[in-house]
Length: 278
Image (cartoon, rainbow, N blue to C red; front, side):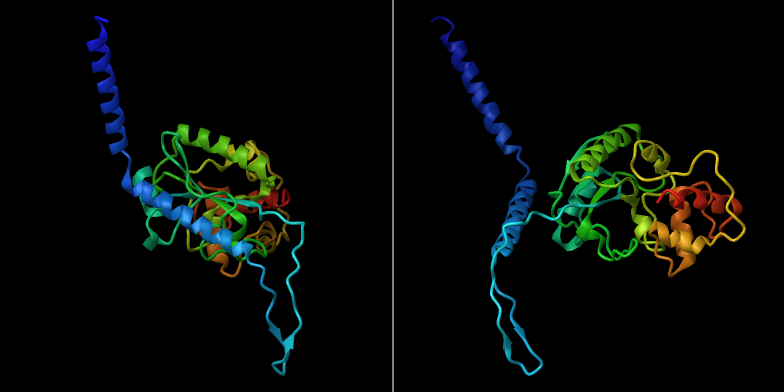
């Protein structure tokens, strides 16, 4: 028992260390977790409601209705992935932005420069990340997409660790939800003229090589003389109501080396090659 005092001291030090660790719990993170859970609980309560449709005819008379629950249902699944840059200075700053109710903005994932992936919202829930946007006939991209924010201020290359983590994350999402290759797009694609991200430094070609979005072939067939590039942009998915903004968005994604608002012959060739993939 001669070692008893030392064992007792070790036990006391261990207990103190455990207590000190408890003190390191971030109260803001705990509050966010609690609020997140309350929001999820509220959504669950909404889905449990079984109220019949309250309808009236043109004379104001009630139309007979009742609720009979079907047994064939599941959660809506995401069908797009929208890629953003954070336009902020650090991963922690972005996490804080998404943790404040007054900012009214969020995303499902944030990828740090060191490759760390922070999951901030269940994939089946609707994040506030796309804003006013349109892609093809879809005018509510938030309801059908997963938003991924990448820690980048918009004026710098993306780091190798974060791109590696992003590719792994995209592969998992594509497998989990059977997301088509064409449906990995950028914020600028769905909001031309309003949003520029993920910007000209983003490695779209590298993503396309892994099956996330499309890229033009290295050798492209020249566009025909009668090539209708506005229709081609619309068929890809772009909102062409303001064609100058649409050209800018297209070139940010598929050209990157030239962001002028005109379609050069090279741009037309690239567009011709790309739109045939959709």
